[in-house]
Length: 180
Image (cartoon, rainbow, N blue to C red; front, side, top):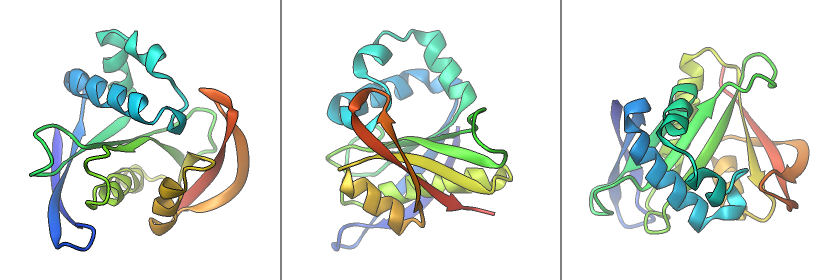
């Protein structure tokens, strides 16, 4: 597990220490718990569903962690467990030099406490270290809070629009950030 300490602004009331930890396959149970919490709380924000991923066994969770770089956020005073997650991976269908930011979510109890930007920066930093030129993501139309976060972090709309895989009645927009 890789760990780094960051300080983030706490919604106007000082600052909180946000610890970002990169996790690996041995942390599969922690990933499972926070990912399922995210899918329960914000189903329209993800391309997958709670029902699909609740059926995953240990092997699927370990494989996911082996294929992606996954980061968790911890904040003293907001609980003992992780309060946010982000991930990055190379999609074989993406252009060379592009990585995807996925699984971005912050627990409702931690929203407004400066947790989201360090999670995004963790993926951007990993992408830079890997030599990527661009980080790409999809954001659900109507998820204005997430879109504003991504814009504050330097992402711009790409003009792409697609149905949300988990609910094709919703659309998602592509955004990208140059990192090289």
